[in-house]
Image (cartoon, rainbow, N blue to C red):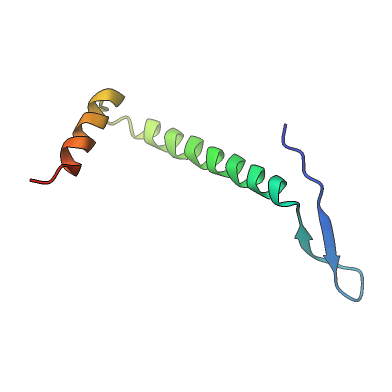
Length: 69
């Protein structure tokens, strides 16, 4: 589970306007967000129900495209 310990910056009236996180917690939070984005993109791709290529074959195709001609 993601654990965060935010500290808040407030304006003169006490309204929270910003958050400060320890760097390690920020990095962990960003990694979790990237994972969620990947899951969302995967779910969208599955809904399209388009033909797919096995991962090994996809990597081979990418390697072929990278090689200079």
